[in-house]
Length: 272
Image (tube, rainbow, N blue to C red; front, side, top):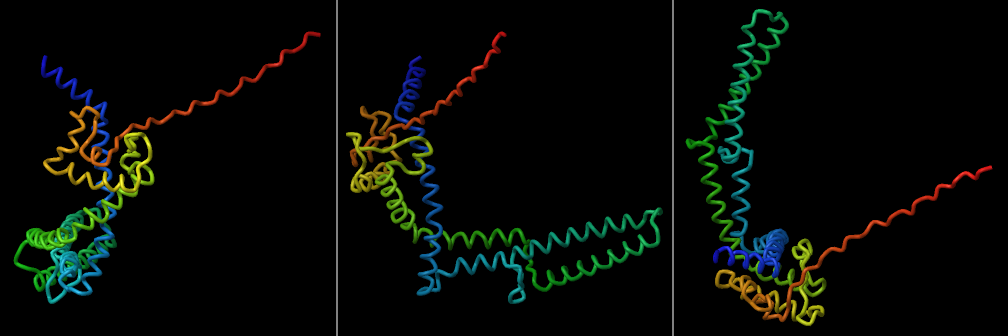
């Protein structure tokens, strides 16, 4: 019984503080920040690659992995995998046509046509096998592709960590600060019907908006304890709300009532 009461109390508290709404809104915002960061990250990478060729490595590596051209007498893992799959497909096609060729009800023209197609496919198969023999590696294409993708992801990860400040500081701070200042809500909060205001109900100043954004860093520390604080705080405030002296309110959409069309008066015929 005690557990049920606690659970009911927690559910009520979560509903009162819009805990789940606020969480989902923040998740949407972080996804958008990640999307916005991609072109900026690419621009910074290109800029730095002018001065340091090391930044070009991940781009060159991925090109080698997915390229279909034969370079230095070697095939890329993707190219080799495609050739292997093409080889299997042509082998199946030849087997099907040979099976059809054994049928007795075929005309001479149909037999000639089938034989010609078999010859053409055999030539293609021979070419593919020759390319694979000359340029292919001893490893299986899938294993080779897996290895090269792992090495590429490691080098890319190192660069991402180096430029992580673009997403964490540059984009995130500008995103949250400007949206809070101009609209009082981020796109995530707008979707879920939430708005940030000052304690007295007025609009946030630019400094309040910046303070609230900076407060997220404190709320995220110690396993996001600052966000969960809303569940036991008497005034339903998170750590970043306390820092910026703000609160979150729910904006309910007002349903527009459909205007009833006035009924047309039916004219009664006058009795003569």
